[in-house]
Length: 109
Image (cartoon, rainbow, N blue to C red; front, side, top):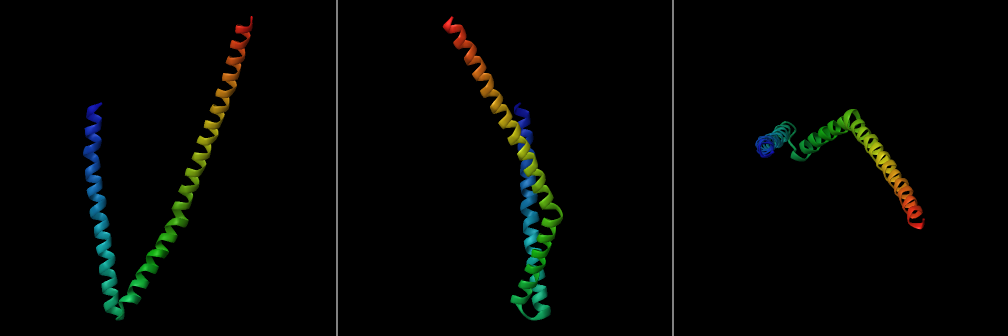
């Protein structure tokens, strides 16, 4: 059991380091893109607006093509889990009532 814990910790740190360096690289890449575009068109504001608009469009496209379907899938799974939990709860109540009724009948005899 202890081996599993140390193995999972050993895999978590490299993933965190990878995510941190990939995020840093992406931020620097976007910054360089804005700086290059600002030199080309002569305005930092317009360059920032153009790059931000591009990434806003890409985010919208990703949402429409992939994320929306994933959210619907998770919502359906959660609905199924809720329905099963509700059925189990009702079954527990019915079983409890039956056992209580039987115990009451036994006690009153």
